[in-house]
Amino acid sequence: MELKQLYREIVNEHNLHPTHRGIMADPTIVLRGVNPSCGDDINLQLKIENGMIADAMFDGSGCAISQASVDMMIDGIIGKSREEAIALAGKFMGMIRGEGSEEDLEALDEAAALQDVAHMPARVKCAVLGWHTMEEALESFHG
Amino acid sequence: MTVEELRKDFPILENHPEVIYFDSAATSQRPRQVTDAVRDFYETANANPLRGLYEWSTEATARYEAARAHVARFIGAASPEQIVFTRNTTESVNLVAYTYGLANLKPGDEIALSVTEHHSNILPWQMVRDRTGARLVWLEPDGEGILTDAEIEEKIGERTKLVAIGQVSNVLGVTHPVARMIERAHAMGARVMVDGAQAAPHMPVNVSELNADFYAFSGHKLLGPMGIGALYVKQEVLENLPPFLTGGEMIEYVTRESATWAELPHRFEAGTVNAAGAAGLDAALTYLERVGFPFIREQEEKLTKRLMGRLASMPYIRVFGSGDPAKHAGIVTFTMEGVHPHDIASVLNEDHICIRAGHHCAQPLMQFLGVGSTARASLYFYNTEEEVDRFADALTGVREVMGYGA
Ligand SMILES: Cc1ncc(COP(=O)(O)O)c(C=O)c1O
Image 1 (cartoon, rainbow over the protein chains, first blue to last red):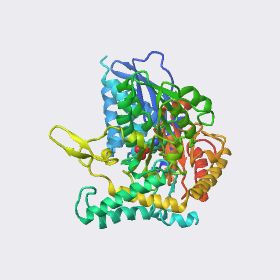
Image 2: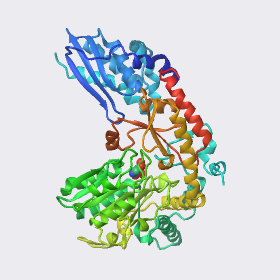
Image 3: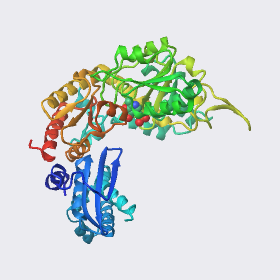
Image 4: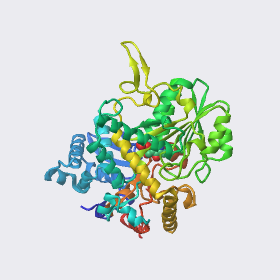
């Protein structure tokens, strides 16, 4: 998808009217993710119940791609198990490296819209910030 | 001489009329004359300079030393011996920090520097602070971004041993009163390192009149090749400066246990030098002299005025630094309400417009300005009014693309 179209049709909605932006009252894990070189800075909050991601929220600031990417990611991981969410992150990273299969893209659902970021090296870090943070948070969590 | 004629010398601009290059503060484009000089060096005089006993090497040496003499004339140094070739401004500042800085600073001494500095003129001084116990003292500019006399008087004092100052800020484009700072520093017994990376491409520089102790610039920002830069050192300082890197080319005599140093300035140019780059820099300076700083200044001011005029009509744009286009050295840094600078740059790239976005290697300045990152359009004499108009139109488009009604 052409970049302008990507912004207009997908990124803007999640950037300007995010579903999951906010502060959670009782998160199980909170992890900050930062891209020091561009100033993207998010606080990811996950609520884990019985090994499942019951809810997730984020707050912070950064470019539209970083913020929209987290919002889309949260859409995709609520209701998933810890392992499923980590696997999904793997699919997202693969897609950004240009290695995603059709099935991976399908599993990523709306987040697959960011696949063309693979051609924009300078923006890769923005797109993966939320996913990296989520992966790190879940991998360090043994609850 | 017109801009249209000059642009014909720049193949990359001629071959890509669709591209608008507004990132000359990062690196300029190069005219054919410069790349020709580099190629000519390799095709007609290639040999390792300064050591050979045959004609090619003599010719390579001659071109290298001719470039040095040209740099000396270009910045008003008394003698070519005072010019050390480096890779770039960053290496020049490091050379001063590792040699002069480490040898001369002591606990309790102060290094005065401006918050407007590029990281290249900050980190070497943090290193000197850490190793010598000296202190950093920060000068802060006024609302326009320029250091005031009062600030200079207050921060450069008896304990100051070194002042590090970028003549022109790579973010705000303002020119600091370097001559006055040097006068004050000398009165206090301090030396001054001037980072001329953004000044030398835009204005005549005379290090002797300035009375600078050290002056650095990069070839690649003033039409020259990448990988060649220069450092001017005042004679009396140069003579007592310990060597920086050691090895081949910088020695006079070596035994198993010791060495004596080559004559100045070769003592500071260890290893095989970038003679082809120097030949390219020589050609770049010739080109700049032919265009002339009056023309460069006039063209930059005309473009900057037009650009700032267009930006002023966009209520969602904030421009940093002076309101006077003459005080920008072609650099216009801005933010757009609600849109991150990286998104601005990415959307402009879709329209083949090249600008820089981020912290511009000046994070202390970003912190001082209270912004995380900014977008920067930087113009040079080869840019046109038509490009400025297309850029301004594209910027209005960015708002719309990012979801804000135009
Ligand atoms: C003011 C200033 N100082 C230093 C530098 C570093 O120059 P270079 O990367 O050529 O060493 C730059 C360029 O980015 C600059 O703008």
